[in-house]
Structures are given as C-alpha cells and as structure tokens.
Image 1 (tube, rainbow, N blue to C red):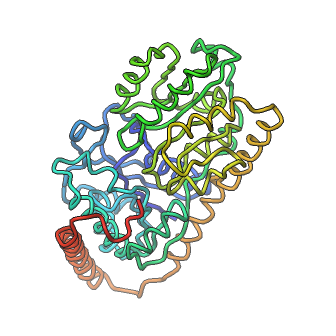
Image 2 (cartoon, one colour):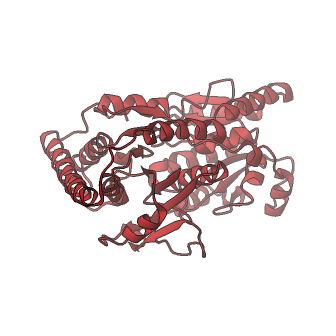
Length: 428
C-alpha cells in the first residue's frame, strides 16, 4: 500500500503525536509499504528527508513550540500525483486534517483519523480561550470523525468517550506500540555516571514534553516533597517545553535544585535514561494513551501515576506500579516512597509485571491492527470510470469536501453557542 499520513506535528517537534506518526511510518516501511508523511516546517528539522513533504507554517504559534500550517492551495497536488496514494490517514481534525479530507474525497480514497488528543486541554494555546471555545473543539473533532471511514482510538477509554460524544463511524483501538527491542536494554549506570548521579541514589524519573497541560507543577511539588524525606533521592527530567522554567523554579524555591537533573530531548540515549530510573512519575490527565508509560515498563521501571484516560489501561495498581484515584500530594509521595522501601523481591515483581504489560503494547501488535483496517478499507473497489468522468467526479468530490468542512464548522460553532459548558459527556 501507499499510505499518506498528514500531521500538524512531526520531527523535530517533541510530543506524543509526532512520535506516534514516526513509529508507525517506520514500522509500515519495514513491512514493505510506502509511506508519505505530510507535516509543517519546523525549525532545525532534519535535512534530506525521504518521503516527507513539508508545508509552510508559522513557527512558535502564540509562544508555544507548535508550528501552524499556512493555507497554500494546490501545493501538494503534484506530490500526491507522483505518490499514487492508496489510503489517507489524518492525525488531526483541523489544519492538515482538512487537507486530508479534501485529498481523500478528491481521489475517492478511504480516510482514517486517529483521535490522538483531547483538544479541550490545549485551548490555552489559542487567544480567546473560553468554555465555549473548548466546547467548539470537542464538537469539531466529533464532526470530523464522522466524516471519516475509520477512527483509531489510542485506548479503550478514548474509544468509549468518542462514542459517548456521538462518533458513529467504526472505531478501532490502536495504541502507539512500544519497541521492546529498543527499550528493554540500556546503560543506566553509565547514564547516571555522566550526570553525576550517585550509583546508589533512588532516581525518580519523568519523560515528556514540558507543557502546562502535563500537570507538571503538581508533579514537581510532589517529587520535591519526596526528596525532603529521602536524602538519597534524585529527580531525572527528560524533555523540553514552555513549563521547564516552572519546574526549575519549584526546585529552586525548595532549595533542592542540586538534586534535579535535566537533559532536554533525547533520541539515541532515551533507553539509557529509562534504565537510569528507579521509578517513573506521571501526573498528566490530558493523555489519550500512555506511550512513555509503556516505554518505562519495557525498561523494567515501575510507574506511579494519576488515574486518567489512557493511563488506566496501562498502569495496573500493585502489578506494575501504582494508580492513584485522586490528585493528592500525600498519596503520590507515599506511593513513590512505597517503591523506594520495597524489598528486592517485591521490586522485581513490579518490574516483571511492567515488562509483561509492555509486551501487550508492542508496536508489532499495533501495526497488525492498523494494517488490517487499512486492507479492509482498500478492499472496497471503486466503480470503473473513464477519464472524463473521473475528472468531473474529482471536482464534485472536492466540492462535497468543502461543503462538509463548512457544515462541520457551523455545527461545532452552533453547539458551542448553545452550551456554555463543556457538556456532552466530555469525560475529562
């Protein structure tokens, strides 16, 4: 198959969607399929990319680390003509998601949409953020999903939420799988040594984009509270983002900044970083799946996390870590301390449970699910057409796509104006 994946975020941007697109694209290529990734231009993006089409974009939108694509009609027409796509896969419902809809309709191709993100948790990046606007983005994503042939949900929680919100098209649970080979082995001892972390230190770790929606103030304050009661403990923070300064400020104010080790974004050394940790701490409640959680578990690292969509499918309380129902600093610190005080036998049991969980989320299993859906959709043979009919039908499909886009926008706006709250069972 020739698979086109359109995404508003991609390398070198750091985030779950960018990593998911890259993981799946590489896995599909290993299976012998061609993949074209369409993504915005980002600063410091890789040179000489193969089968990646970049679209002009505004950098660092509203002070964030996101790029926002600029509307350039017809820019990708020749690219798609040369690629001969079999299926279109959108990873967002807006911007390049709208492009995906136009392409799928014009070429009469199946359209798949992965609902990666709970967009209502990201509206603070947009000027004029309000409850009405959050309702608007929920409705827009729902309307978009119903214009597609297939929706992928990264977790069962999100699949249930989408059905509750009114998504009628088929939904398949397809999480971003973890590479067991990559994360099961790592040089944790060497990584610690390079950062000056004592060999006998108890290392609390975190990996992710450092942004407001990740609940990092709570996480930082909870880790600081744990450091106050365990003199051998350190905090290893992997990632970059607008909330990095806030995390540093929390540690500095507590006079524990000498026990905070930040390393920015990692690529080749990421597995080593996980293996340098004794526990993985996670406080985000805006996720749709637990990518970093399964990576940590593949490395044999127990997890303590807050109960939330996408997290509860991964963290099994007492089996591979601890899942906390409430956002309580006392409970979060107690869970970390419980792991720190474990006997080697009890700790090995948690690590073993984590590795087994990671196996159930392997990339190979996820790719099998995704490709089975692709093949089913591509198996719907279109009726034969002559060239003239094909040209006319393409124009009609394009007009239909434009009309559906307008209707979706109007429907989402109408729902936002009718309901001042989030309503509609947002489940967040």
